[in-house]
Image 1 (cartoon, rainbow, N blue to C red):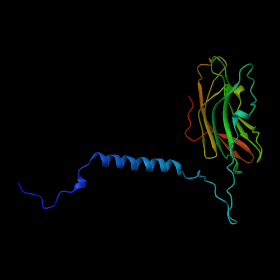
Image 2 (image 1 turned 30 degrees about the vertical axis):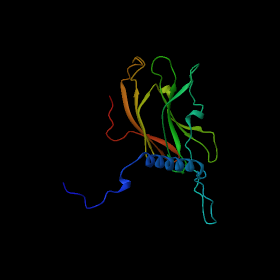
Image 3 (image 1 turned 90 degrees about the horizontal axis):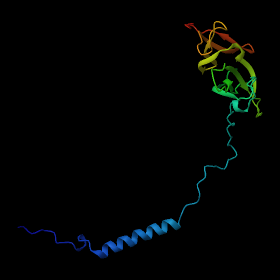
Image 4 (image 1 turned 120 degrees about the horizontal axis):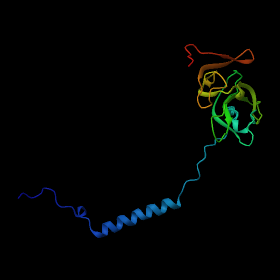
Length: 192
C-alpha cells in the first residue's frame, strides 16, 4: 500500500460540532432575513415634466347594460354571442350582439344588434338592428372580421316548416358604408 503524499486534513471529517455550527449559522441567516424585509414594491413612477400619460383604452359597450327591443314576456333576453371592434372607423369600438329570449323550450329566433356609447358616456345603446327576431331566423357562424360582421342565417321557406328544422341557409355580411350598415352576400355563399 502506498501512503498519501498529502497529509490528512483535520477538517475533512465532519464531526457533530461542525453540524451544530452550520445549523446555527443557517438559523441566524433565516432569522435575520425575516426581520430585514424590503419595503413594498410599487409599479408607479413619479412623472417627470416631460412624461405624457397614454390615453385610457376605450372599453367596448357591454350588452349586459342594454335593454334590447325584444318582446320576451316573463323571460329575460340572453346574449348568445358578441364581438367588438371599430365598425365605423371613428376610433371607438362598437359591440355586435346576437340576442334571443331565454325560452324554456324550442329554438327562439335571434336578433343581431349593434351597440355604441358616446365618448365619456357609460350607457350603451342600440344603434342598428341587423337581424330582427320577427324574421324567425337563427344566427350561426357569427364573427367580426376587420370591419365586417359575418353570419350564417338559418331560416324557413314557409310558416309550415317546423321551428326545429330550418330549411333555408344564407351567408351574409354587413359593413358600415355611407352612414348605414349595408348587407351583402359574400362570394361563394351557398344556400340549402
